[in-house]
Structure formats: C-alpha cells, structure tokens
Length: 520
Image (tube, rainbow, N blue to C red; front, side, top):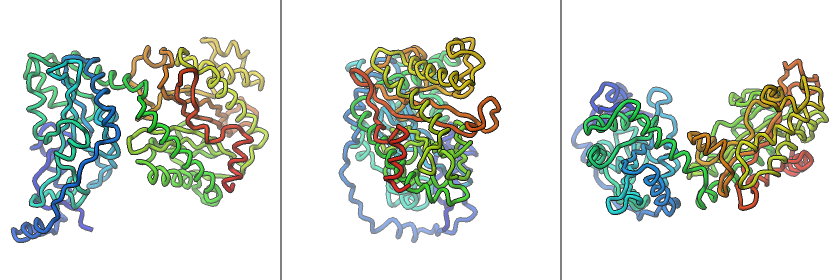
C-alpha cells in the first residue's frame, strides 16, 4: 500500500518546533514524498472532492463534561490571574513514517474530558473568567475536519480523513466538551491577549515543545520574566494539576471501578491460557498478549507495560521484556492494568503457581507477603499518614525475615533507620496513588503525598512483595528464584478502605481454587 504523502499536500506545522517553516517541519510532513504515485491534476482533485454525504452527526457531551468545569474552577483558584496552557501533546515517530499510538497528556485529559487518542496537537486554555475570577473560562484549540475539496482530505497521511478517519468540526467539538472551540491557528493571538498587563501566562512543561516556545516568546514580548521565574510558574501548574487529582470525584471513582473490573477479566483470561504459555518457548509473551487482547477489546489498552515474570524473572521488579519460559514448577508474577477509554488505569498484581498448586516454599513466601498486605488493609483509614502504609508492611516483612534467619540482627534493629537490612528483599514502596497515571499525582509535594493523611476519595495501591533472586547466596536454596508480589487497588472510604480488586482471589487456597475453576 502506498503510504506516502504527495507533493501537492500543504505542509502542516511540525509539532516539535516553534515555526512551521523550518526544515524539520518539511522533513516530517513530506516523509515518503519520493514514493508518491497519486495524481495531482485538477480533474482528479475535482472528482475526489465530489459526491460525499456532508451530513454532520449530532454531538453528544463527553461523559466527563459534567465534572470538568469544577476541576477547571479549582485550578484557576489555585493559580489566580494566570492564563494556563494545557497541550494534548504531539505524535511521536516510531519508525520512519509510522507514529506511536497517541495518548494525550494526563492534565489535558483531566481538564478537557477527552480520552482515548484525542487529540494530537490540540491545546486547552484555561483562565479566570472576566466576570468572576474564581470561575474558569476554557477555550479548546484544535485542527478541525478539512473540507472534501482540501488536499488534506485525501493526501495527508497524518491528519487526512481518508488516512486516519473523520475529524470533528468546530461545532461538534464544542458540543462534546461544552466549551468554546477555535481553530488551532488562532492559538497564538488568544494567548497573547492581555498578557502582561492583566494576566500571566504558564504552560504545562514537557508536553509540546512548540507550544512552550510560543508561550515563552509571548511572555518575553509582553514583559513577563523569563528564566527561573518563568520555569517556576510552569512547574506550579504541573504541581497543581497533580495535587488536584489526589482525591477522586464520583466520575473518576466510577472509571476506576471499570478499569479494575476489566483488569480482572484480563487476569481470568491469563489463567485460562496458562497451558498455552507453558507450551510456548516464550510463554511470558503469551501471557502478555492474552492480557493485551482484553485490555484493547474492553478498554483503550494497557495502562503500562505488562510485567509477565516467571521464575527468577519475578525478582526483577520491572521485567517487561517478557521473553522467558513459563515452567509448571514456577510461580508467574503478573502485574498488569487495563486503561479504559477515559484513560483511568488499574494496577493489579497476582502471583500464580503455574501448575495450579503452590509448593511448600512458594506458599511460605506467598503467605508472608499476604500477611503484610492484610496488615496494611487493617490500618488504612482516613487520618492515617500515607507513609505509615509502608511502615506497617515493613514490620511484617522484617519479622518474617528474622524468623527465617535472614537478617544480620533483629527485626527491630532492621526497622531502625540505621538498619534497613530487610529492604534487600523488598526495595520498592508499598503504595502509590493511582488514576489516569499508573503512578498518579507524582508531581505532588511531599507534604501532600507521602506525609499527607489519607482522605476519603483517594485511590492507591497496596503491594508488598518479597524477592529472592536465584543468585542470592544469603537465602536458603529452596527460596532462590521465588518472587512474590500481591497488589490491590483500594479506595479510601469514610471509615476504612474498599478493595476494588477483591474479585481477584488473594489467599493461597482461594488462588488455587480460582485457577482450578478457570481450567488450570
């Protein structure tokens, strides 16, 4: 198939550079020109532009649009007298003339309500309303649908309707988002209006280099400070957007439930296909593929690279190569999450005996990890500091390691700041916030995250583990090559926490029974 862009195609602005006229923009838009065989004569242009149904479907409001106004209001109250620029991000080249699937920036999605792959090169601008500075006014800028008489329609392999599907009109986009919508070409004029005299200007950093350069130029032209002071303003936007997501609204909680439910369906499919994984030389890839099928069919895709780690691979915390065998005598640690169309993701880990039955050594490690997780569930409630979740799990882990004779001192000595020997076998933390990002709210200040008290509406993980690498000479041979992690997604309620992923069995006997029911 000819995937090139013909030479008559107008050059679109390169999303990675400030100016559309640069050589990089030309190179990007014309990739494949040397292979083009499409006609460019006027008769062809007239013919391909004719005979199309021009009916525009009615626009349905986005499900999140009932919640995004309140989110934007909170943002302008946090960062007053500032025009806030939230780019969706740009397409990124995977190889030559093919791009990676697009996933919008999280802050853009949170404040716009858009999800899935919407919408590269677009920008949401949020600012105080002139009538009420505590109320936000939002304007969405994007590249709308081109006319049938435009060469973009048939010739642009990045944006053309014949190549990537129908784009929205301005009116449709406004109906979906519930905000004013304009063509992306109007962005610069809008950003510059009243800046300096009445408003500051800040952009979400690290998302769209062209937009950031535009913002910096406008700041300079209007007398706003540059350098470190400007970077502080941009960083404050990133911090505010991160901290605002620490407590989920009703819609977000609904989406988290949907993501977890889809993830559990994926785990059920993984268990059912374990015989296929055992039979394949790269059985970990079979597991990864089975889960990905559910994630893509029931959601937007996986929320992060699936970890399918059999045997000693389970002791590599972020094992995503997934090219190993799955042997009947091993455990397989599966850490995976479905991201639903709204971009909320689950993050669940189950460690499964491939044969369907834990060996005595595997069960010993598994039940120690489960006890640590249960201890965290027992104390988690509003008012507890987030950091105390981890401390609780470590008390259980250290006690078991002392009982097994693995520590060079007592559990109490290990738990002291000058000890910490137990962390050799669990180097990661016990919990992290969860939402649109698998490690959500990561730019929040320490006092808002690690040192903060749990609040109703927070969603986070509980995920202790123990990992005994096969070359670890400090552990008995029977434990080497065993890695166990049990991870659940929890919602803080008025008096405790709800385990959103409880439908995936956790206790060893229940895991074995579950696997037997699913045919393993």
